[in-house]
Amino acid sequence: MSRPDMSVAVVGALHSNADGSNRQFEIAMCSPGEPVRLVPEPRNKFDPSAVTVFSARGLQIGYVSAERCAWIGSKINQGEDIRAIFQHPTSTGAVIRISFSGEDPVLPPERPKPAKPPADDDFWPDYIPPD
Image (cartoon, rainbow, N blue to C red; front, side, top):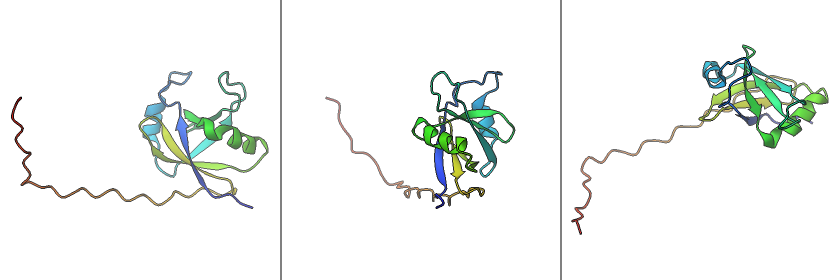
């Protein structure tokens, strides 16, 4: 049975890569729908179940969040055909979209932006006299 596509947070973007490249800059270079590569990192000294996320240009942009990395890493290690694409940047990293069906994931529909409330130019706050 195929699992539905899943959006997953990418964390650790505030750190630099070992080669000195900037993860946040690389995230800014990514476009929605661009492929990303997921690579388990069993020798990670902080979390042996860590899964590294690389951009289409081969630069690390971060890690799959701790809540999902062990499960996703186990699926990769079992040989499942897992594919991922860049979804969008966030203030502290990014979000990627993962497919477990062996097919390329599909970006979810964009959420509508909240409408701005109408400007009320006739609004004046009540005068509050000093005490």
